[in-house]
Amino acid sequence: MIFLDNLINGLSLGSIYAIIALGYTMVYGIAKMLNFAHGDVIMIGAYIAFCGLQYWGLPPVIAILAAMAVCTLLGVTIEGLAYRPLRQATSLAVLITAIGMSYLLQNIALMIWGANPKSFPRTFINGASIRIGQLNISSATIWTILANIVIMVALTLFTAKTKMGKAMRCVSEDRGAAELMGINVNRTISMTFAIGSALAAIAGVLLCSSYPILQPTTGSMPGIKAFTAAVFGGIGSIPGAMIGGVLLGVIEIFGKAYISTELGDAIVFAVLIVVLLVKPTGLLGKPVREKV
Amino acid sequence: METQKKALPLLKAHDLHVYYGAIHAIKGITLEVYENEIVTLIGANGAGKSTTLNTIAGLLKPRQGTVALNGEIISGLGASKVVPKGLSLCPEGRRIFQQMTVRENLEMGSYTRPATEIAGSLEDVFKRFPRLKEREKQIAGTLSGGEQQMLAMARALMSKPKLMMLDEPSMGLAPILVEQIFSIIKELHQAGTTILLVEQNAQMALQVADRAYVMETGNITLQGPAEELLHNEAVQRAYLGS
Image (cartoon, rainbow over all chains, first blue to last red; front, side, top):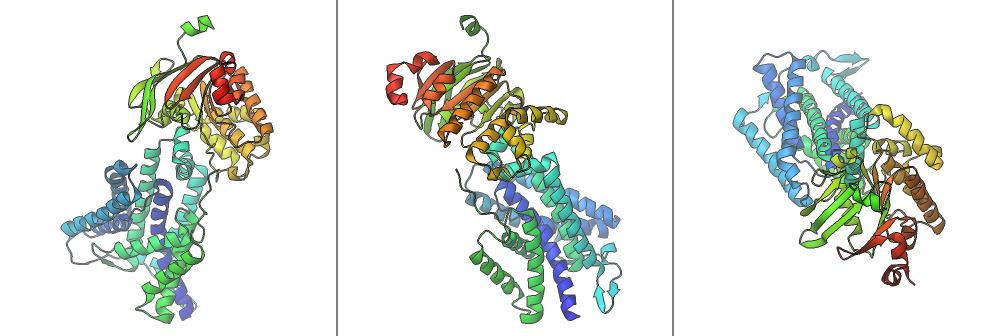
């Protein structure tokens, strides 16, 4: 039973990583940059939802939608102001800008909400838990896993079927050729940031529903682990982010349960190193294409 | 020919200067393409042929000079806004979307056109390239080199261009496929597409073209009817290997 409990907890945590990892992997795939501020967009999303629930008395669904709207706007603004002017710059310059943006967001949160941790309110997400035999599954776990599945299916359909989704795949493969098709590359990249950031808001709410302590650094560690998950699964690959995220969550929980609570995080990163040594492109990553 | 020249050119590049950082790659090029012509741009590696096409297509911005399509200035718009005006570039190295299917590649070619028109264009393209119809659902990266080149050309046709620019369509292909590509170019021309062709294979290019420009280190050094250049001694020595 303890094994199953741990497995379910791992799937739940992994689902949160997976949703965050999608933001990293989509932006990397399309804009070819690592948006290290992504974890902090999660934190902002969680704070907006917190304010909606705690101060403005919004119904939970509206509070989540408000968080998504703010994060979407934030993501598009960050891209437009900070990353777009660097489109031709070296990747190192973009990386440093992203790290700077991460600290900027944390400090803005510190100014607005202070350093004291807030306790995230309970919502329908923290409803009654379900009992199956001896197994007790919390409501938050079910919502998290469910959200992950819905998001994965929706994103897969979006990139496979819609015009914008196909345009994203084109930009991801060859930006110049995409432009020659008449695709507006800047708009496509903005759209990618919008989707990734809206998902970050959802991840923020789910994260704080399971681990209800909210402070300006809340997004950092999950952000880095989700980035690890994206690399683990093969950065740039949407199914890779999903698999990487879920596996990472399961490994983390099992590591903490059976090996050492203190070393849980270390185990996660050790697994990443092993995977990268064996398969440098990650589990589902595609090998770099040779130019003919 | 004389009456045609008095008409407005379909494409006019005027005094183009293009830089890569500090390198002055194109040093004041002026060229014209009239409706229903095949014009070819020949020259050695690094002469600036591809840079010229990329600038006309809007991928690169000229520091000086203009590009006009049907009298309308299109330089500075950016490639994605040039395509719907009726100009498409089939780029060097094909640059098809390797991870998409043949059909998806073609659909992306008509990205700027209304969805209702795509089915008809697909049919036209499949009629011209039956091989692509057979491989419609195949991932483009698995096609052979010749098929990939055909896909790249078909994709460029999907935007219904008035002027189609082809950058080294014969590159890396076996001689029999080169013949095939050139006969397709002739067919497209007969069907009413105006073509601006960049080629290393000067012999073949001059044989299909009406007019030609010869480029050397960022300048146009010779121009005239293709027939004439084919027999020009300097051209023969430099590019035709005789």
